[in-house]
Image 1 (cartoon, rainbow, N blue to C red):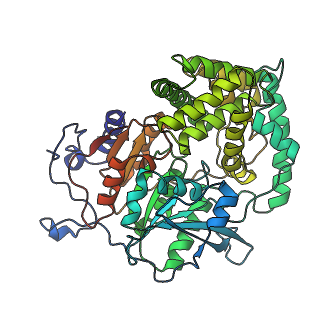
Image 2 (cartoon, one colour; image 1 turned 90 degrees about the vertical axis):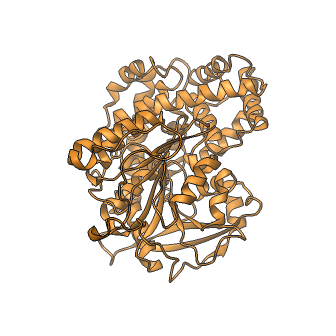
Length: 523
């Protein structure tokens, strides 16, 4: 996977810049020092080409938020305890609902800071956003409980929740009946994709009207560009010149939107498990169908290796459970809920051998008609991915949405590569029927620092193929990204890979990264 990403990034960068300048950027696959020319990275005056290159300077906040211990809030919101050895604090700060009108109403943004006893008090923070994939605070908890925890020994990581979600002011605008139809994708006996799309679309249009009335006149101000302005509000409050930013999953689009609007305020830019930037709905959803299919298949294979109850052909059993959910034969659990539950568990759950066996047992029990254990996974997934605020954010940034009448054909076309996930992926587009959409965010045309890109081959939320469009997005910036591939299972390479966390710690230093610009980390 990384060679594909690197080759496409290189090709686009070469196209966008003078060949004399960029012709030497190569897709190096060797282990050891990069054999290419000495390409200058970071801020460096033109008359100091022989000086030691440095990256933009980062600093600790001069005026910090009012951080408070929030263990009880985390337990209530996410049914979790704070990981051992990690200190977690929470805060809220107010921003204009309309980023272009500071005199209007405000909305409260949730933030979470994670440190350890070893974290230097004067260390500059790394700001994390995971957009609408998960509340950023929940993504940070996964990092703090995973291999990425070693980053916290060097600097704080501060998660900024997407407005309307997480620990800030949440959006509540749908009826229970609307949530039920959208969460189940109108599964039931005798319903094909066309019938389900009609039912989901009807509920979605009613939900769009209700949410627009509830949030009016600011219903479109829950978006990628607004989330980027919330991060800028934090930087301004901190009174620092630049911030280090890691965008995870859909948060990569928030990070790129921030970089486009605030070039000179970017001190580090990490795109972890990135999605395509402003990618049309059809292409992004097709990639997600393939990516989720791949992660589910990989899970089944690794579950078999752990001796779990799925057995040697776990993918076939999981497919039976999904089919039963689509037909309304799974004790009130739909196919979309099964896929959301399993993919969310893969993303942020325990994927050790014992964790694999536990999830495998829940699926095997469901295959025999006992859905009690699976329902616990469904409930956990809905708590973080089934909120009204997430739906508003997703729909506001969904562009080029196909019509309802197109969805059965798309489900059929996508089934060639994603037979288990194509129907629910297509039906997810119906969930935004009747919603308005924001203007596409602008792409960055320059950056003061080379990005670091971490790509997971088994991203259970978005897949990895759409990341190739980053080539076109980054081409105008004339940067030389470092790409790190990881073949593990989970959401956020940084959260799950010690190897990637080590690269991030180096990247956060004063000196630019040296060595290969294409790297691989073991699963």
